[in-house]
Length: 386
Length: 229
Image (cartoon, rainbow over all chains, first blue to last red; front, side, top):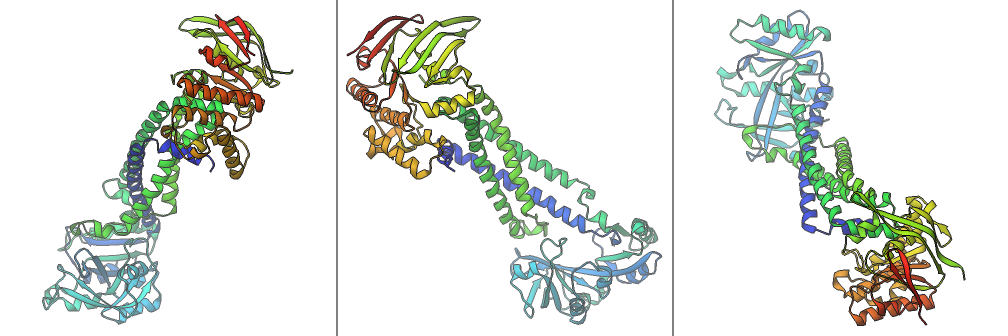
């Protein structure tokens, strides 16, 4: 601590340079936090994905499926259960407040057995047409508690009477599910179905299929698709494991994220390295003076490292903090047309990675100036001042 | 009287391009404890080289450099650095202060390398600044002080760790006559009343007159020696 004034004096020698370097480092680490945090979210989702479940939807663009398929697929060999779901996408009060409710039929609790809802909560969904079970995250976000009313305006999901608003009652609050990084709201499919025009009833957006043998889940998915290949509603089934593995999305987004974070780090490295090299060059005689006062090679090099590390570590801390702030408000920051993006997980691990990266950048950027200082001839360096 | 500095058969050469230039050729020098010695001579005569050797900033090619009882030739770089903190104070022509630090923080620098507490360091700094007459300037940065005041801060920094030996390289070379006299009077006081051994390199005969002994160098040899009353 006693050397802190010396380090700060070195940093603050050129205030504009110090501030700009710090800002650049902070922005780079914000990007780092968001990309690494996004990968952490993908990892958590993939880790929790089940290998005995299949997501089945329409093969060709967003066409709803007849709910009758639920019974038909349930009868296929190797299928242990099928459940149906619909979605009501909309907003709460303001179009910026995007929200969606998943409307579950009575079988969902048999197929989504890993959802942390209690039997009483599943009953609340089943027995209350307008009932909602919501996650803690959603309760916090919308400031809801059991007994509250929650209204969603859903321009794309029109009721039989032409109304576009859907009113729900919050029944209880359940534990969060990593897959739903923005939180969840689960409702009753019958409420949705009965409120729709006759022509729109009996339609679902997705079926959840449970395989009786996890080692044959992919085969069953293929058999389902094959069985309906020439029907009026061709299906596309994919195992949950594969669906939630982001690397199967066509673009290896995890690698892209990592590369973006890496590019940011290189940018910071060059910036800090240039700054610290320039600073050492300008103060070579000052470092020589410190050596005459009794500072050792290592002591002077440690000062240079500290000068490089200070903006890196502070920038990393502030950048990751900013990333956390952006993450918690991401639904407000992203245009409504994009939908609900996944939320980066800014946790202690991301902070640790950021701190390690900052230390590595500081170490790398101070390496050359340190080498130069270690070879310093004090007498010559002092005479250069003249 | 015991020797503060003893140089025996010291040879020192520098590389200039492909050539090797010998600056000191078997040089001998004894400086008793408590002496104020002025080294004079033209540029390149070897006086700054001697100062650097005595201060452990440079190493002799051969011979012995014994300062405060320590053979500097046998010390490693790290040991030399620690030795400098305890035994030597440097005073430079251009003060060599840290421009971003206050006078007090500049003076405190050598004490950072000791085990003194913050309160003890502060006390030592206050004493050193008082000795050089700058108690009221401790919060000022070098840019806010005159050349003479900056040199006083440089002297306070040199004496704050209470070394026995002060090495001054043209300490008045950047100062006007009156300020230079004040600085030299201060050095004399440190020599006489605080028993500091002082070795001062200077081109200025009036500055050298403040020393007890003068050595005039030419081509790495003592050309003339004189004793001042």
